[in-house]
Amino acid sequence: MTDLILYNKKEIVEYKDPLSIVKEKTIFKNRAEVKKQLPDICARALAIAWIDEAWKIELMSDPQTALERKGVYLPKDMGIEYEGAYGNRPRLVIFEEVNGTKFKLRVCALQLTMMASR
Image 1: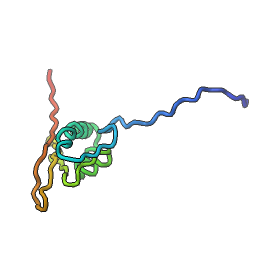
Image 2 (image 1 turned 30 degrees about the vertical axis):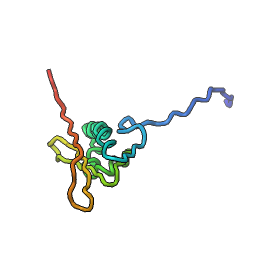
Image 3 (image 1 turned 180 degrees about the horizontal axis):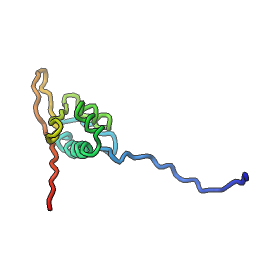
Image 4 (image 1 turned 60 degrees about the horizontal axis):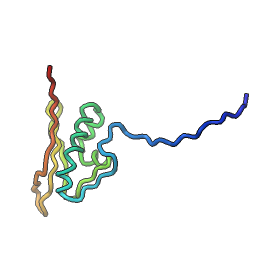
């Protein structure tokens, strides 16, 4: 049978990643923006690392590239490091490089702690 069937054309729905850490590309321009907004983003990144082993490994090995892949870009004079090996509570530390030196100035850090209660 080769009958034509009429149907209502539906709007295309864009796929959204349920494990995204930002709704849209986020480019930080200065320290004040980083201090205000990045802790929430880092909290989501660490929370996802609790349930997604592949993301955890990526975040541990190169957190700055991992965040950039998810759409988060730090100013060029800032960086982010992952502290804590397996078994330890992970922490993301955001730092600012001091002009022309090897010194790093800590901007902020985020560490999540899971608490259970009865």
